Structures are given as C-alpha cells and as structure tokens.
Length: 217
Image (cartoon, rainbow, N blue to C red; front, side, top):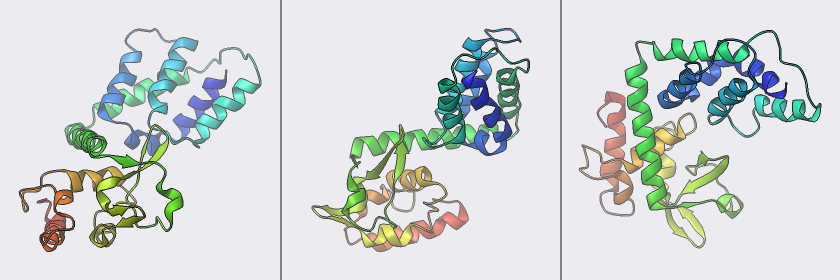
C-alpha cells in the first residue's frame, strides 16, 4: 500500500520527526491504537499517517512515497504492522520525563499562532525583494510573513531591529518560537515587544532579548 511506504520512511526517520509533533498530536497518535487491534488495517495506517503528516513539510519524502505508491495502484497489506510500531513510539514519547516541558512549549507556540493570526500575515511577500532577514512561518504548507515586523508594506520594509535580533532569537531553527517572543507580553517590558517597534523604547526591546540567555524573558 502507498501509505505503508510512507510509514516505513517515517519510522526510519522517527528521531527527526518526533520532535516536530506536538504533545497533542502524539496523544492523538497513541489514541489510534486504543480503538484498533494489532494487524493489517488500512484504516489504522491511514489514520496514523494523517496525524503525523500534520508536522511534515510539503516536500517530505514520506509524502512523496505516498503519492508514488498511489500511482502504482492497489498493493496487498504488508506483514509488518508499521502503524502499530509508530503508535508504540508515540506512547514511548509521551512517557518521557520531559513531556511536561514539551506540553508547555506547545502551549506557548499555539498562543503565538493565535496572536500571529490576529495581527495579520502576508503570504505574497516573497517577491518583494530580499527576504533573508524576514521572519516567516509555515501554516498549512504556506509560508507566511508576520506583518508586525514591517515598518511599511508598500513597499515592504522591515524594522531594522527585527533583522538584528533574528539570530539572537534563533529564528532559523525555531521560527514559531521567535514569533511567540515578539507577540508575548515580556516581563522586562510589561508589553509585547512587537507593540514597541518603531517607538522610542526599541532599546528596551534589545535589552529584553539579551535576557534570553538567562531564561528570564
């Protein structure tokens, strides 16, 4: 089956994929196993893939395998229950001592997503010039640019401070974390850093970013 080809790739790359899954998604994945029995089940395999695929980029090899397998037409169920193996991996991840910290990080990221969507995003800014310093996030396989980072949008002009703090906020490695920092009330500022862009308090934003080294942002 096409989906089994995809699951085999996912299982082989599980150490890279598991950190991409939220605690909620891991819980959903583990719950698939509670309503089915071990053995070949096309429904369960598809359900497992559907959960995991939420965290996979559009060009991931597992997605490509799914489409390539579909083109080959019907194939019999495999002997190995890859879907069950992945369900068990989710259960192991949920038993990790760090799961509470993971859940807290997921909640912070979700709050950042909600705040971002409230403030607005641009999805067509990639053709507006050099975007290397711009903050961008992926939502439903689409690259979006938070509007708060721009001093103007006609044409797009980024606040210099956003570009300067980009490496300090690890925006390349954790774009949602960087966005969440800008949009979350900061104890050093008693305001969201994004709200102070373009004001006389920009120097305070840089100071607040320095406190990240002390885990006190």
